[in-house]
Length: 145
Image 1 (cartoon, rainbow, N blue to C red):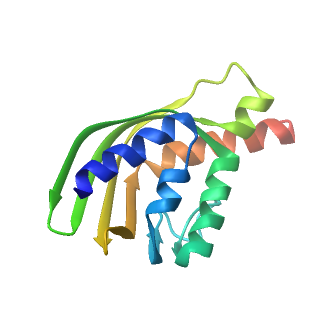
Image 2: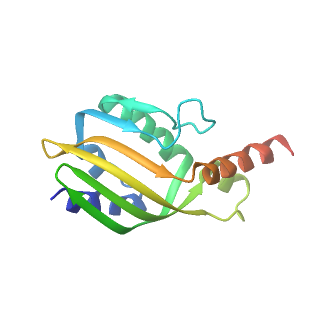
């Protein structure tokens, strides 16, 4: 059941539709980003509760748009679901300044713990360096370097 939920929820990412994800968040959700809160990436750190997670998701949506987010493998064991995804994103500030910039392709692993049929923990693993380089490209183009 939980693997099916992951498949359905993540399929909506390509349409920039986060509603299925919001609807599945447990009130006590803990969201662990792939980078810490000291990272130059604005979404780093651990975020708690629906309000905290909503804020970080709004930050992600303001900076990135998924062009592709397709499962390569999703496995479930008890309350834990792991997924490996083929992803392509566009860093929106860069794309606005330099439309010829290529989107960023990478693989992402996501681990969800379910409680009461809802996502109680989220943890993502991906190449934060590639995402950071795309963000820095935007910053350097705006500073004229």
